[in-house]
Length: 275
Length: 251
Ligand SMILES: Nc1ncnc2c1ncn2[C@@H]1O[C@H](COP(=O)(O)OP(=O)(O)O)[C@@H](O)[C@H]1O
Ligand SMILES: [Mg+2]
Image (tube, rainbow over all chains, first blue to last red; front, side):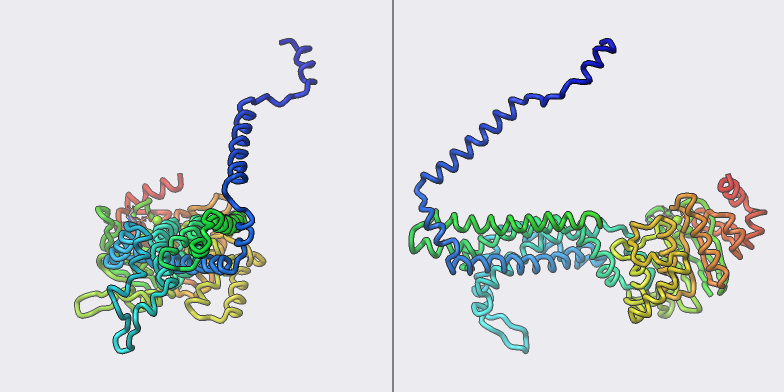
């Protein structure tokens, strides 16, 4: 190439490269989407019923229960998870083994089975009580809400414990040593110095678990906890509009999960500079 | 003031300390020297019971550190009692170990507020004064990540001072610093030395040791090989290991 050539080339406009593969891929995706939309539009779905039940009081009450249960079960799961994580890292072998056993059991059995066990606790222990303080009938205490909370929270804790343990191990030993050196007890060093740093680290994974929990609450419909899915089931048992009501439930789960995902993105963006 | 007798500590197959005796008087400044792995950090950490000796013991002002004596046995104290004893020793680490989720000021006030139950206003007033003393007035709100290594180490010194300790333990306080930042930390340590603070300093800064320390202690393979007046020992070391070490550090 001679210099005059390169001079003339430098004046040329740069065109976008043609990428036929992209066009074909996009066309196929749009086509598929079109088929799905057409299918739903022409299928045996009465969209007016979806619209009517979307804000039915029973459904909204179920939605409130779903959100409430997500919050309560995650709170229980996180607190117990922190406790078991600390036990796993304890110098006391009895505590370590107990925590391991707990995780082994609750990760090793299906959540549905655990919920059924909690719900039927009365068959094992007809009365629950503290010695000297008296007792109550188990069926009065273990309502569907309580059984669901225990089932989801205690199951969640088994998973969260591993996440928290990882977070605790990621904090440099020097952090706790500096706390001990100013005269904090081991417990104070954990609570004031190590845990706050570990919890910041585990916000992203725990955020994902919150989102899973929203959907997991639907399992509790089998033990009569009146969350969203149970709500739509009660209605379609009466009016037989099964698909319409399942779509109602799907819309609400998607709405809640979308909001949470948005919140998670904002939170992680907010936390990044501090990391 | 500090008395260590027969300190031994083993890590697996490594004998980190082997029968170390050391006496440090109030107001004395002692430098611990020796090659890497010779047990200097372990000795320092036994003084505030961050490391539990396998044998031997440390007394500070006559109090047995980390243990209580029951007949002919030593029983380790409970967590609370050990924590209480550690208040007497401030410790400054090679890697600063500032708490990154707290500001410079909070790093200093955390101990007084949580451990000594000092009222927050008092603790903050004193922390500001300490920051000024280490040349960091106005940096109260900075987070550790915003500070240079030298500044972080000075905050760490202020954090140790905030507990009003009787002794300050320094574990290679300048070894993790870029060369141009070493002087500012040594400057703060010289000021401290001038106030009559009792200091035990693990360091490779022989200039500092010669100038500031009353006594130098040379360690090798978990034992004290040679000890004496710092100026003497650093200019006329008698033991061949000390001679070799000083030669190597001086380059
Ligand atoms: N927590 C520990 N676990 C295992 N080995 C250790 C530990 N701390 C120190 N050691 C070993 O003990 C010896 C002395 O260590 P140290 O007191 O840190 O030496 P120095 O501070 O003089 O470099 C070294 O061989 C080191 O590897
Ligand atoms: Mg060391």
